[in-house]
Image (cartoon, rainbow, N blue to C red; front, side):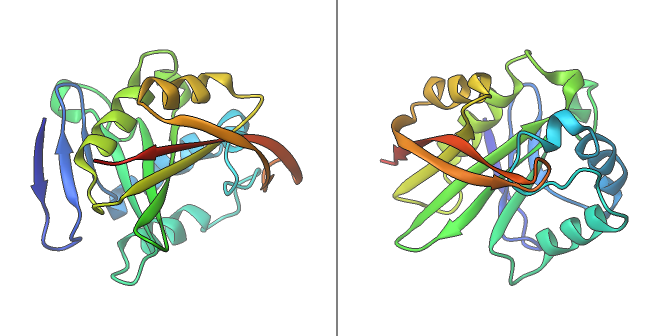
Length: 181
């Protein structure tokens, strides 16, 4: 795995054998909108609304490029190996005390391919924010995402609830933690 820091965004491009994790770019709006508009994707996140309002994806990409952003977002880009330019997204939401929360979604054509596990593993091993701890939570009706986290060394620490914008309700979650280093 190669890591290269881009000065413009100040977070690394992580190159794996299968894909690269790279900062979002304006040209990603169309594919992100296409995949995030899928109710199956939106329903497994806390923040993606369904239906996706006009302009929401463009605003999201613009926020991800802001120097004052609170969340670093990477596209899972498979173009180097003949894949799609956006196969999903992965992010680190900054928290206090040198911690962050990892979040991710994979586009339906790439489900059950190990892509999510590889992306989480690549981001965790790079630890671009030099975090001491990373957290993650998944909806309890998404055991595949829970397996991704445990496969990548996250430990279950308890149950909680989070509001899902797409579902317009509070959903039970499993919370995970990984101590870095």
